[in-house]
Amino acid sequence: MSFRSSALRSSTRVVAIAAVACLWAAPASALEAGDPAPGFTAPNLKGGPKVSLSKYRGKVVYLDFWASWCAPCLVSLPILDELRKEFPAKDFQVVAVNVDTDPKKALRFLAKSPIGYPSASDTAGKLPERFGIETMPTSFLIDRRGVVRHVHAGFRKGDVEDLRDRIAELVEAQ
Image (cartoon, rainbow, N blue to C red):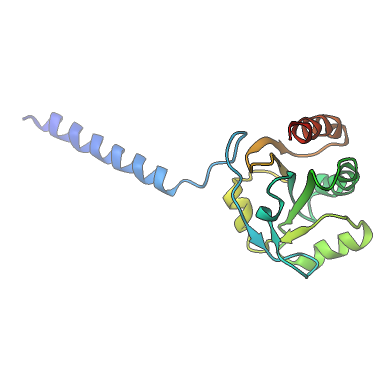
């Protein structure tokens, strides 16, 4: 065996080992439509009972990740609260997850713009990691069986019409 073929085999092994190591160390990939939504239980931002996604199994859920420093998030919260009221509570629920490291900032915002749906507090940022969130806000429309049907990154006022149609379709599917 020549030096050249031995060196080629060695470098091929090194590349293969490096590729496997990169895959092992890669962050969780973002959830996509068709993926099961990871369950979670987290502290309630306002205190009181913990927020658990499994509590809403059997309903269509709009799971919204937000932060007080995120301008589009601040636009979306009151709009989502109005959207929540358009559908029967037995069929649809908005659930939020706040990712501020200091929950007092989120509570100050909610004091000015209250919402009628639960918001979990995730100061450690574990849930965005589990859901593979890459931008804020990011939301997941989840069907009654717990399957993600739509991922919505960012938010503009004009987005609400499309969201309303998607929610209505899932609510009517029963």
